[in-house]
Image 1 (cartoon, one colour):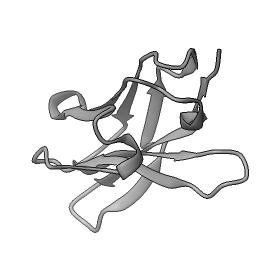
Image 2 (cartoon, rainbow, N blue to C red; image 1 turned 120 degrees about the vertical axis):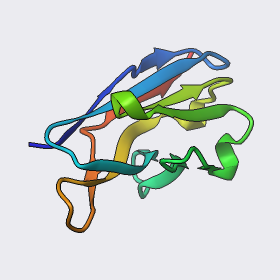
Image 3 (cartoon, one colour; image 1 turned 45 degrees about the horizontal axis):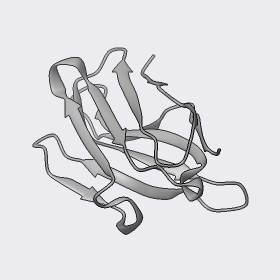
Length: 120
């Protein structure tokens, strides 16, 4: 069974930092684009950042200059370094990966979500 397992969430004060990790496990042929989305209460899920297998990145405007996405292809892991956190960053953060389980078409997979709360 293919899974995305997240870690690193929690409570942080405004201006603080957190690092999220997400590892893909199971029988996987290839891990393509990986990324992070978030969903705040009463709002739709929104893109935070994505990274391709080649390392190209794309960020939402509201995190540019504060968050950095990276990946370790050998470990099938994606990271999100979050600095200068603001209360409006409070949300459940979801890991995303587009993966092939075999040589057929790729599918989208999601992690279980991890809560980030930014509050004093």
